[in-house]
Amino acid sequence: MLRAVVAAIVIWAGALSAAFAQDLEHMAGQMIVVGFQGDSLDDSGVKAMLNDVAAGRVGGVMFLGNNVASSSQVTAIVSAIRAAAPAGLPPLIALDQEGGKVERLTAKVGFKEEPTAAEVSAMGEARASAIYNEMANGLMEWGFNTNFGPVVDLNVNPNNPIIARFGRSFGDNGQEVAGMAGTFINAHHNYGILTALKHFPGHGSSQADSHEGFVDISKSWSAAELDPYQRLIGQGMADMIMAGHLFANEGAAGDSETYPASLSSYWITDVLRGQLGFGNGVVITDDMEMGAIRQNYGFKQAILQAVRAGDDILLFSNTAKPRTTLANEVQAILVDEAERDPAFRQRIEESYRRIVAMKERI
Image (cartoon, rainbow, N blue to C red; front, side, top):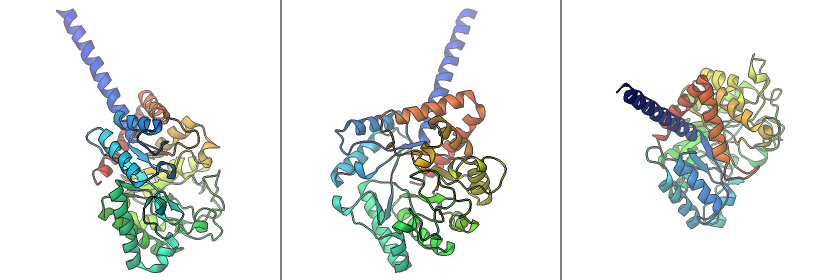
């Protein structure tokens, strides 16, 4: 009898352990958003991505231009993503659709193209509202529920190679930028689409492009670049905030002297969550495959540091070394570290709660 009871306890403990492991994997999966290869349901990359969605290895998918062949093919992939997703939490179906040069959906595939942020800002609030409602309506009709915008970088460096050059900023004044960004956000909310303020703590003053490599804004950045974030957070309009791969040594003790903002607990936890009041909001990294990260930090190192810094979602374009195993690799790193380190497991649980709360608003 005793032997049977012991055996039953062992079986129960094993089942409990397996259930916990599954829960941990599910929570870690929600922290991952990846890009994929292919533009048709017949493509192997699309099939692999759908398997990741069905298995809970990802919490969202990002479309790039090379995933967009036609309206019918995009909507077919989006419908398949929704159908594959486990019941409970909708996957983020995301893209960058800012207007101007940064548009994944273009007139070539029948999507109405919109002006740059700089051009829209010059038109005034009423016209901006019409433009962004038109954009958001189109995104909804194509099946998207997340747009990685608006840009709230201040246009303080006219020679900036990635913001000013492409007219991606609404202006050089924090109040003006926050106002136009609010118009962008309200329009998207009208159609059930989440948005992401970017690129925290500010890419507008930089002399270089973080897509290409290390970007130090220590001498060019000013606290005025936080103004749009503070305003929009205070108004409850920030669904997500995207952390930029921008090195800004503020002289604070700790990791701000070692890591870019996206990997820095000083910038993410102390400044963004603490000083600016974004305590329980979702922080998503900029693409973890950009040169600023890939050229300076190891794959595993960057993932673990991002989570420890306070990021909730890790974004991978899957373009540096395209592969169908990427989501599984990232998830395994998160789960393995959580099983080893209780504090890291707690961070995953915190991020999961934030993501769930945000997704309930879709």
